[in-house]
Amino acid sequence: MAKCLVTGGAGFIGSHLTERLLEAGHHVVVLDNLSTGRAVNLDAVCDHPNLTIRTGSITDSVLLGEVVHGVEIIYHLAAAVGVKLVADDPVRTIETNIYPTEQLLRFAASGNVKKFFLASTSEVYGKHPGDAWVEDDDLHLGPTSRPRWAYGCSKAIDEFLALAYFQKYGLGVTIGRFFNVVGPRQVGNYGMVVPRFVEAALNGGTVTVYDDGSQVRCFGHVNEVVKCVHALVEEDGAEGRVFNIGSDQAVSILELAQRVIAKVDPKVDIRFVPYGEAYGDDFEDVQRRVPNTNRLLETIGQRPTMPLDDILDSIIAWKKAGMAQSADGPVK
Ligand code: UDP
Image (cartoon, rainbow, N blue to C red; front, top):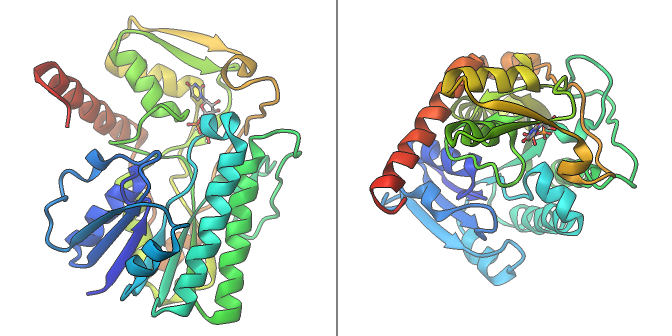
C-alpha cells in the first residue's frame, strides 16, 4: 500500500477520491487551503487512522516539504474551480493553477514520487468545433480578451509542464481531462449548473437557463470518475499520456433543466437569462462539449456510464438529506 498525497482533497472531487484511496488501503495525506474545499467534505473519514489532513498552501515550501516526505503517489487536484470564479477573478485563476503546479512537480521530481496524476479539464479544448473530442486534437482556446479562457489556458500550461517533467525527469505523470463531473458535495456557488438547478428547484425558486439552453454537456458521476482516476494511476501503461474522463451522454442544458424540474417539482419555472447578466459582456460559452473516451476504455477497461437520471436522483437525495438535517439542527 502506498502513501498518497491528494491536493485539493477537501474539494468535491478530491474528497471522493480520498475516500476511495482509503478504502483501497492506502495512506492518504490531504493538502487543501480550504479556499473552495470544505472540511465537512471529509467528515465521513476524518477519524480514519490512515488519513492525515493538512491545511495550507502548496506555495508554502516548508509545509510542502513535510507533506511530500515519503509520498509515492501524488494526485494534484487543487485548482481554481468554476466558470463564475474564473469570470470574477482571472488573476486568482491563473496564479492558483500555474505556480503551485510547478512547485509541486519540482518537489515530486526531487523526491521519491513514482506517479503524479494531474487533474486537467475539458476547458483546454476551448471552443473545439468537432463532435466527440479526442485527446490528440488541437486546442481551440479563445481570444485573450475573453477571461473565461484564462482557466483552460492555465490548465493547458500545467499539462505541458507535467509532460515536460515526464520527458525530462521520468516522473510518472498521467493527465486526466475531466468533463463536467457532478455528484453529491458539489455546490453551485462557482457556477456549476447541476447543483444550481437542483438547489433552485428544491427551494421552489426559478431555474435560470443561460442563453437559449441549446448548449450541450455530458455529465459524469463523481464516483465513476474517481474510480477511473484510481485505475489510471494503478495502470502502468498510462504514464506520459492524456485521458478524457467523463460520460459521453450528451444533453442540452434546457433538457437538463426540464429533467430536474420533472423530478423535483413540476411547478418550478425556467427563466432564460442572457450570458451578459450572468457572467458579464465579455463571456463566451462552449456550445457543445462531448468527449471521446475510447482511450480511457482501452487502457483501464472502464469509463463513466451512469445514466443522467440516476445521477440526478443521487444528487437530489443528497441535497434533500442536507436540507432535512439543517431543519433539525446544524448542518455538519
Ligand atoms: N448554466 C446555466 N444556468 C446556470 C449555470 C450554468 O444555464 O445557472 C449553463 C452554462 O452557461 C453552461 C452549462 O450550463 O452552458 C454548464 O455550465 P457549468 O458552469 O456547470 O460548466 P461548464 O461546462 O460551462 O464548464
